[in-house]
Image (cartoon, rainbow, N blue to C red):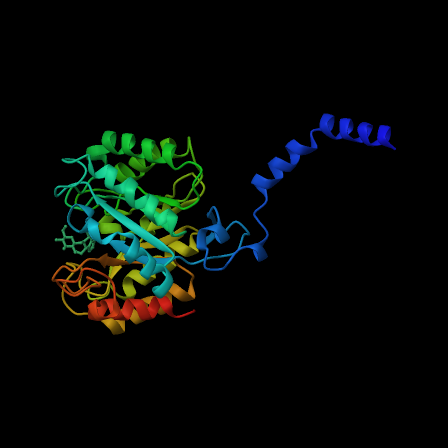
Length: 334
Ligand code: IDC
C-alpha cells in the first residue's frame, strides 16, 4: 500500500498536476458563493468588453455607477478614506474617476501630481472599487499635442497596475476644437493603447471629438483592439435626445459606450440643475446598461458639484441639490 502511494505521488508530480492546478486558479474565477456582493471588484474581477457591454469575470453584464473627482490639482483632498467609504457603503458607488487635468496647473506643469494619482488609486483599490485614471485634457484640446508625456505616463501606470483588475485607463478626456477622430484622436489612441497593451488587457476608454460627443464618428471607424470603450459625455442642461441618438447609432454599430463624465448642470458646470432631463438620461443609460460617472466630487460654487460650498465631507447635510439627486439615483437598484 505504501509503495502504491509513493508511485501515485511520483506520477502526480511528473504529470505536473500541481502546476495545472495553479494555472486553473488563475484562469477560473473564484466561486461566486464565497464572495460578498459588496466586495465589488473581488466579485466582478477583471472586466472585458463583450459586444456593446461591460462584462465581469463570469461573463455577466455589469453597469458601473460612480463619481468623478473635480480637478485633483484643486479638489484632490476630497478623495480620502472616509469619503470613499461613504460613497461605497452609503451610496453604492462602484467606480471612482480620478480627473488628472493635464493643463490648468495639472500634470504638464506639475508632474508630482502623479504621486497623488497613485495615492488615490491605492485608496480606491482598498475599498474594492473600480478606478479610472483620466488623462484630463480640456483646454489643451488636441491629445496629440502632448503625446510623448502621455505615452510615458501610461507606460508607468500600465506597468504598475498590470495585475490589478480595478484599474481602467481613460486616455483623453475631451478632445475638442479643430481636432478630428481620423487625424488626431485615433492615431493618438493607437499609440497609447499599444503601450498599455504590453502590460494589461484592462478596459481602455477613448474620448471622442467635440468634447467626447461624436461617438457616431468613432463608431464608423473604430479602433482595432479589444476591450475598448468610447466616451460619451453630456450635461443635462445642454445635451438632450439628439446626443442619445448618437449613442443609439454607435451601439447599432457595435461599439461600447462609457459615460465617464456627465453633469446635472449646463455644459459649463453651472446652471440648473436640470433634473428632469437628467432623469431621462439615466432611464436611457440604465435601460442599456451603459456605465456612468457623475461630475463632480467638490464643494465648488457651481451646480454640478455634489457638495455645498464649505463642506469637508460627504455627509447628507452637505449634499447640494445635485448631490442628493445623484445619491438617490445610485442607491436605487435598477
Ligand atoms: C469644469 C469645472 C469648472 C472648471 C472648468 C475648467 O466644473 O469648475 O473651471 O472645468 O477647468 C467638461 C470637462 C470638465 C468641466 C465640465 C464642466 O471635462 O473638466 O469641468 N465639463 O464644464 N466637459 C463638459 C463639461
